[in-house]
Every structure is written in C-alpha cells, then in structure tokens.
Image (cartoon, rainbow, N blue to C red):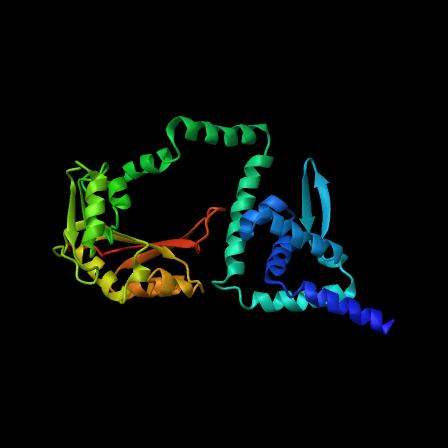
Length: 323
C-alpha cells in the first residue's frame, strides 16, 4: 500500500511539473472555461491545451461537463482528495508570490477580456442583439469609427506634439481634429515613412530630434503624447522633463507604455531599455518634473494580444496663477 501511495504522489508531482498545466490549473480554479477560451488565454494551440487538460482530468485535478457542443473544465479545490489539495495549494501559493509582471499575470488579464466577452454572449435578448449590432456596425463603418469620433472631443484649436512619432499612426489620428500636430522622431527613415503615410495633410510638421532634447520651443503645445516609446529611452526622466517644458500652462502630457514585465528578451530583439513601468514609478517621474494631477489607467488587454499589458498615464502642467 505504501508503494502504491508513493507511486500516486509521484504521478501527481509529475502533473504539477509542467508550466502549461500550472497555468491552466490557475485559471480553472477561478473560472469554468472551454478549450477554446483557454487556448486564447494561454496562447497555445487548442490541440496542446486539449492534451494537457486530458492529463489533468485523468489525474483527477479537473472536472468537466458538457454544455451544447462545448466541454467546460473546472478545478474545484474541495473536490480534490487530501494529497492533491495539499500539493496544489503549496504550488499555487508559491506561484502567487511571483505573479507581478509574469506570464501568469498576463494570463489573468486575458482571462478578464474573455469574461467580458462572455457577458455579452450570455445576457438577455437585448444584450445579444447589442452584441450582434457591434459586428453589423463594424461591417458597415469599420472598427475605428468610435475611436475616431471620440477624438473630436479634443479642442480644435490645440497644437499637439506626437513624440517618437514613428511611422505616423498617432499623428494620422490627431491631424483631422486639431489645429496642428508636431511629429518628432530621431530617425529620418521613420519620419520619411510618416510623411508618405500622411500624404497631403498640411497641418503636420515633421521634426527630427531626440525626445530628451526636443526641437520645440518652450510653452508652445497644448498636449504632448508619447505612445510606446518611453521604454526605448535611456532617460525617461529627461524625456518627461522636456514634455513639461514644451507644454503651455494647463497643457496635458500623456504616456502610453507597457506595464512592468519580465520579458528580458525584448532588450535584445527589440532594443528595449526598460521592461515596462510600474504605476508608482510613472507617477513619481511626473511629480519629479513638476507635472501634476497624474491619472493612470490600465488598458484592457485584447484576448489575442501577445504582448504585455498596457497603461496610459496623463498629467498636467500647472496653470499660471493670475492673481
């Protein structure tokens, strides 16, 4: 009997030795999910996910049930036997200590997106019609119509700096709704690509220069946007200080970048100097350069997105006291 018990524990330890299975178990303890949903969350082929689930099912770690044409899986802690529950609890608690910025944290962000999509699909008839209308609207008008319309909320008289403009996708969105866009990039090939992209648009000025030493006069722009650029810079502080310098009093600075993560490979294959930014770090940077009222929003992750999560941080240059 002791030999049989030892063999069983060894098998269970083997099941818990695979990182993919651990990711699935972590998700399934939180929610009942289908193979397709799990595949989108962990970004592995459905065949791989199905194979891992079969091993977990055969090992008694997960249960399943059928709903229509789908099979749903779940890990119910109270249904595990004592040894399984003890083993899984130890492993899960260890994983929880290493969550921040890891693959597991990204899984949980994608899980949130899946659950948001599911809410639309499982609401009452009106909710289902609304979900279908999104598809109809996108087919008729494209999937950018809402974003483009909301951009019209920007004051038409503004001058906006697009810092690290790259090939011009931000400038392209801003140009139709503001008076002027100043697009800055240190790379002349990038600026040339942006010029070609924007064609005959006449309210975009292209300037070559470094974000730490902007070729823009002090206090001449109403807003400055830096989208997915800060992690490339040697000195984010210097770039933020320059953003503050070129803003008019009351102007707004916006940073969009990755949340703090652990994908060190990005340093080598994409030239990233920083592995994302934590919220306190960004808030402190804004405070250090004299920008006030910081607001940080974590952006929802698309379920198909393979990169780390994103956040947007805005702050303002203090207005001049007229008294």
